[in-house]
Length: 220
Image: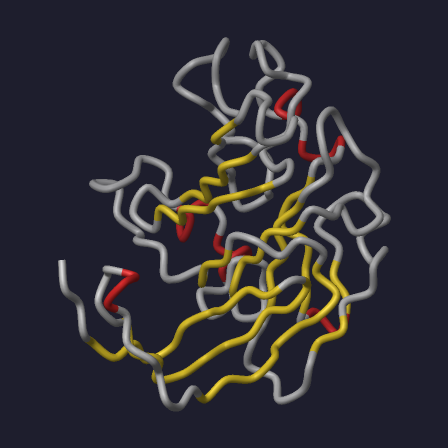
């Protein structure tokens, strides 16, 4: 497939750095035929994110029971309000750090919610989430969404599940925001590249899906 279009905004992840680039051209999908981009307008949004990985804008969630029986705008309106952790304008960024939160089973890992609209560079404190919940720092510009820490164990919402000892985020490698069904879906390698992986469905609280269709085998 040949693609040659201009993207209005793209988020770039470098080691420990998140940058936003505007007007980047998405070129031919064949790496051997990729063309150079002469000019890129970009700025660094945040630093201090160990192992920055999966990145996605939150985006707008549908408020339709046709698409989702439990839509976020109806059930979790405060979580999508301006400045809140799932404000549609914010970006979610994966990291291999818990930012001070106590680690649960598996490797550390988290998703931060970042407001990219400020003019300055956000220098994220390494231990701002020591409280072990959806902590915030830098005037709310950076918030913890979810981490591999006891507050986000599957047992909180699903005590009968076979996976009660796991959280929904641990060494995250991927992320899918389902803006119709209305949930955040990380993909993780909690025990490294050669270990068992996980794919989870998270409520706006950052905890695994409440009222899962299966009481025994819900995510993660």
